[in-house]
Length: 269
Image 1: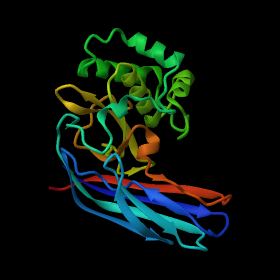
Image 2 (image 1 turned 45 degrees about the vertical axis):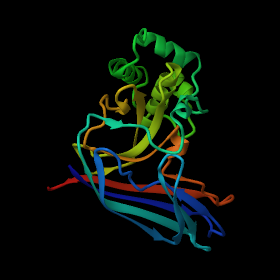
Image 3 (image 1 turned 90 degrees about the horizontal axis):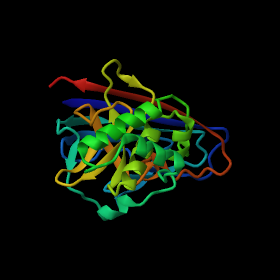
Image 4 (image 1 turned 180 degrees about the horizontal axis):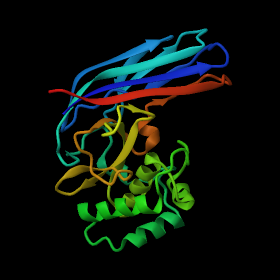
């Protein structure tokens, strides 16, 4: 499947910017089942300083905002060819050892609510693919999707306690639960082509667990499936903070308003 993506992010500032830097993780990965055909990043009132690969094999672009700018727009656009591997990415790669994905982070750390949720799923006899699908289903049932219910700083334990969340929360809960079972797990940020529309309000997030004999396998808790050719992987990490599309913004006390335009659609072969 060939997917065309256009993702534009605009920041409008209350006052002209004196100095600011942004770290962007917006370039898709070259992985099993995914080939980048073309990809461009365009900037208005900002310019790239350097590009490098981080510890998770994410391509990171560091950009500087032009002094005096009142708004900044970053537009990513390109085409990606995807294939169906039933969500299986395969062997581990990256500069971090596999065991580093067993450690809980501030966003995934379990508490009483998450431990209870895991017990509700039942005993994990082999903690294989079938059990992880059951875990995914139970998380979606216990924490129904609710747009705007949480924010980027919401912890997995907080989302379970609230009983609602979004894809980021579902992913953190799954990761935290998998790590409780000594299963390496990580966060994935990327794009999902919707069947009923081209224009979307935000990018997507899902989890991957490392399973003996298969390697990394994806689980989209919010949609109850493993990723198929409609999914495009962009960045991975131990939690959202490692894979966030934009981090490292430093504008002092300057207030900003964020707006996002995203289009994902299938191209004719």
